[in-house]
Image (tube, rainbow, N blue to C red; front, side, top):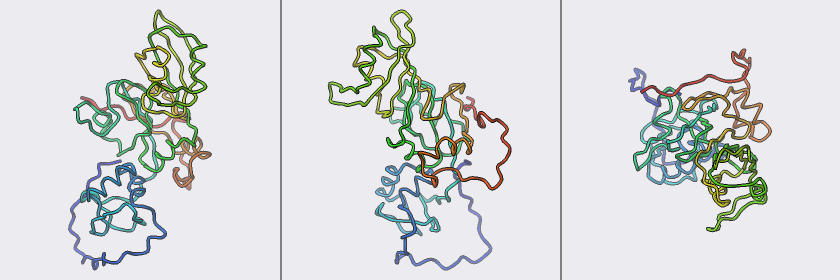
Length: 296
């Protein structure tokens, strides 16, 4: 996506009469404003609702005071004075997040975030899930909040795959106890986790871990419950999308036809890229266009 900027051209034509904003039109065929803003890639639904509470959203010149408001997209919708454009075609990128970055737009402690490292040519996107500071691996970056939310829902059943290096002594029998779920001392409950011992190197163990919940630091805490200390963690797959050979810091777009092929059975069709009238010939059958990390 190009930078979201507005030109200030002055029209030679006479402006149309200002719409009467004191009377609400019929919004029965619209969608809630927070959902609309999420679909437009402005923010998540929760963040959009917070923007409304702060008075940052205006509809046809009137400050919005409640998220229980529907729009059709034909209105003049502005966030902090900037007009919200109509939904762009749904797109998703794979990003190999390096260790040492925060998965957020900003950090009060001044640590570098993925936004600081993502290419400036990349459109505004939303992350599907998060990876903590020291975790590496695949992050999916859609430009559509509705698709992001749908892909995170537990009912999709998407499995997250990790490779973990952990210090300590462990047996496969001990790892198998995680299949029945685990409850930590603080009461946190994790559902079934599959962990396989790949190999041991001295006091370090390489493990393959699969889970569906993806709660905060779930892999680390579950393995710590068994006496292991994770010292490297890489997410290699999220649902059907793999990290593959994408190098740290690189970004690659997932072709629209691949998104439809992989998601059509679990994601509502209205959230997926639409079928083109004439499908162009694919240049790279196994991948998409790559955008490398910004140069310093």
